[in-house]
Length: 97
Image (cartoon, rainbow, N blue to C red; front, top):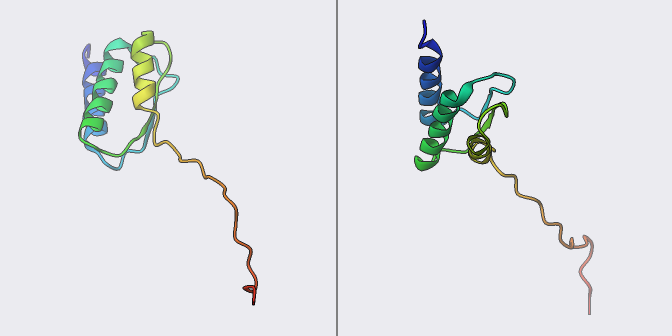
């Protein structure tokens, strides 16, 4: 009925905020609307507060700019650490005196 989209997004919210195994949700290309975007943001905030692992959440940009920016920031996923390349030790024989 009329409230089916709201109920659906609340279920998605509960799933995101309570599941450690969720790693990525891609809603890009779906016009989810402002209220659904707020539900997703609340899920990401609850997930962060509960110290669950980070996840990637992709949404369309067709929502209010600040809301979109917050979702992008919290739903960016795990940041990969860059390898710092240092000098490698040469393999071979040790010098004799």
